[in-house]
Image 1: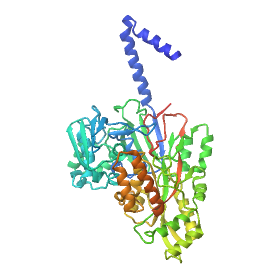
Image 2: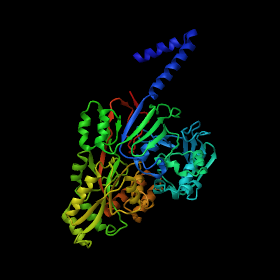
Image 3: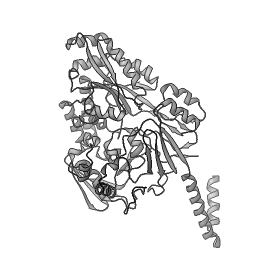
Image 4: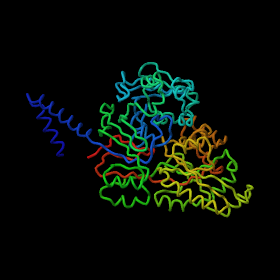
Length: 547
């Protein structure tokens, strides 16, 4: 009530005769001053790992999505921060044809690409940028792709490389995608980080100067933050984009990622005020963070999965009996207690229970080392076998301590006669080698990207993803047919039935062992405003400020 009356008095004063113009000018000055005060604030984020680059289409990790996709770039569509639904981004409206095979996007006008120390745009964002972004991924003979030959795992794993037949721009602010067959979650895919829109003008400049690879290290986008510099394994610096097209999103003058791989050091920095937001603390520190009056222990149930993938393209892991024995010998509850310390729930299926289409009727195989040993003997390995067990070198939201988990699995397997050598690499190398299929078994995980079962069952287990995020290298036609049938219908009941049957096949074939769904914690200083944990696993600073 008080606020309402104050606004009423202010309005009367502002419209009183000869004072009206002076008052309007006064309000404009006050508003500008308030906005300047907001943009004078700086924030430091203690992040957990170095990005492998800033060319978002090359990567599938939340590290790159946080450092590039949701700082430097935008997409045609965006995920709403509150509920994860899709909303307008660089496309202000869109429609799907009656047959479900054509999507037309109407683009936002007046959006500007970043001006940086290495690029000054001469035009606003338009359809040419969208066409370039997707044609580079779609066409192996695209000039920029030939000059800078990298892979695009998401674009391939999601079936888009095979399914997008044409990308057209009828006019400078309209883009049309034509598909070979229905892709039910197509719009959600357009909001994912890999679909971040690049500047064609900037790409043309790089191509002409023979420096196409710079697109990965000197990014240019339309997003809320402008890239300033990256000091490898140390810091990434961004400036707030004062010209950002969406009001209320940019509330910081500068944003710095302080790359700090040790979670204990991250917490020390947060407590000393050297950073205001940190990624994933150790589970053992959660209780003390919760009690610290200077901090707010922001948390939510994780839309994620930590798992152990078996390389089914290699003997003896191509034998389902061996995989069942390995799966049955892992004491998940001991792992939950030691590794997650009460901050996770045991996983049964290849996606979390909060994902629609989850089959709650499926039960986990019992922990039974004696039965596991008998299965190994049945498979011809009565004298045991040797495997290389890979463990991630960094903390992830779905796995706070991969090394400890690997050691516990190593001990479990030793009880049934399996000798496991623990192997690790730097994270970028870890993923590269795993995609190449060099591993026997590896610890990895996934945070949901767009809220559809296809993101789990297709991306992690589909035949299209064998060279990408399908680290089990598992291409099983009965399963894959179900995933593709589900993707190709818009009927939600028909999709659900196929996904439930696919989960039953997964459980019978055991291409990987689901371990846990972890609660995500991201502590922040009490003076941080507007911070939310993103359900899709990345950290974004949209609407985040400092009091």
